[in-house]
Image 1 (cartoon, one colour):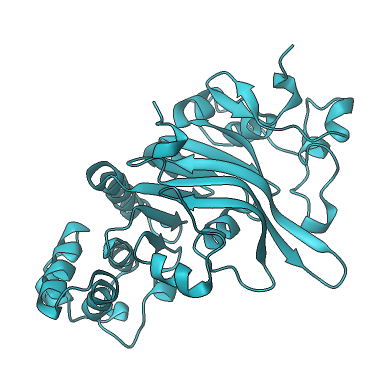
Image 2 (cartoon, one colour):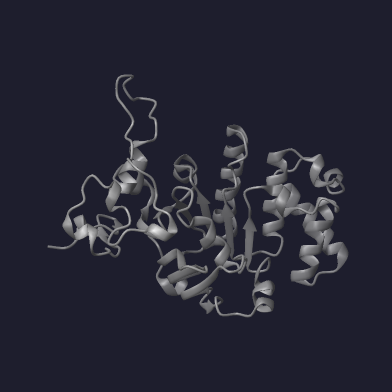
Length: 327
């Protein structure tokens, strides 16, 4: 059972992210709300362009201009952080929020050894002496599964394989004991066996350290293996959110049902066809009125084309679909 809002590590309410242009204001994320509890892994899933990564970047204050948070609130451990000045966010980033990006090479400085990079992060945020920081850095490398950490401490990022670099990035994200870790597509560039190891590492991080983990991905297999709850995004909105098992086995939104139906199953008959969602996600400057999914939805009716549904109870989940409006 998920704790109440007051006990959440991360609480996001009505978050709106805009990209102003000369012609129009493009809304990349339109009024989403979610929260993550201590020790919980929340999966955020959706197609490319759904707004997943932009949400993660907004939470840590790394939106590229002209992108900006145009509305809503972001609270970390009960304290609002979306209105902090850049310097205030910089102190939180790395200290209370750790970030794991898709490509570890973009997160690591090629000019410094991995040990020095972890050590400097610890010195910056925890105020330890250099010897204590080095011991902690070595312990972190061992914790994330880097073999022979004493020797690897002095190696540069290019001397590690892709999977090992991702482990180093996770160690870097954990260096200052953050309350929240945001992992953006952490397994995309890795082969299947390494993916499984990184998934196990993230699960152990949440379970043993009590950190909240926000896992952003387009891979439902990763979500099924890792997350406790899942939020499904479409065109900048959350269309369904609930316990991962229920969302996967009993999807309540037509888009989620389409996603689940498009995943091959080992037991499926060779004659059976995978479900196909006709059309494509709308561009930011052409999002239709009403439910954004309505042009592709096999269950749409008149109200779907004119009125946007909010999240409403749908079994043990919540779905933004008029099919679940209370009678």
